[in-house]
Amino acid sequence: MGVYIGLDVGGTKFMAASATRDGRILRRMRADTPPALEEGLELLHAMVAEVANGETIQAIGAAVGGPLEWRTGVVSPLHQPAWRQVPLKAIMEERWQCPFRVDVDTNIAALGEYHFGGVRASRFLYLTLSTGMGGGFLVDGKIYRGANEIHPEVAHQSIPYRCSNPAGVQCECGLPDCLEGLISGNAIRRIYGKPAEALSPSEWSEVAYNLGMGLRNLAAILAPDLIRLGGGVALGGGQAFLEQAVQVMQEHLKIVAAPQVELSPLGYDTALYGAIAAAIYGLED
Ligand SMILES: [Zn+2]
Image (tube, rainbow, N blue to C red):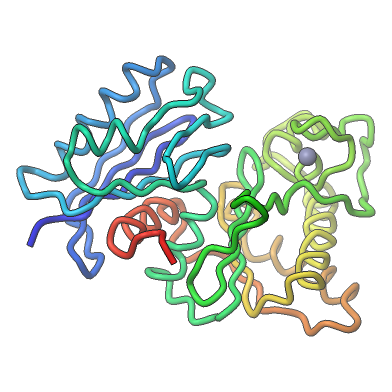
């Protein structure tokens, strides 16, 4: 039998869970992300041991922030500054003697929605709107990869935007006009001087408008069947925020049919479930 382990390795917290072959979670835990690399790796090993609880580990899957190389498993997550060119796959396979599969957190999250969130769509786009913004695009359940297997960066697109404080618009990638620089949690703090949960209705409307224009571009270019949104800003804004954004998208889409757009039913566990899916089903074609 044995168990499958999923790891969500984030900049503020680590989550781990063990699951059966059909994805039923057996044990889970979470911990704050240590700043140092060695401590972080030791914590991951301890969490794997804890959730495995003595069972044979069949495979481990992990969601890590980009950039990373999924085949070699060398990771350099942007929001964990001590982690640069870490050969995580080699380290974990050496320690645990089982396959270790890792990919960018948003790709892994898309897999979580697909396998454990009831997605039936052939062309499925998952977007996360939290501290930053990113996405993962699946075609028939397979991760779409760009040239040289790079991860497409859907948040770094330009849109015509509405903003009551345009001087605050700046993307962390260095460009002045990215969608992420308008609607991510960090962007909201820069522009409005407060966290998303403190936005007024008119400020939420600006964010919804800008999200809607981004959705319009993605819908027109990718023509997905379904777009799902997760992450603290999207889930915090909730259904009313989403409906405003969808209305903007629909008003600006003329030729391509509007896709279904909905909030993630898995909430904050999307990447953890995806990591379990990566362990069970793998990432190869
Ligand atoms: Zn950018």
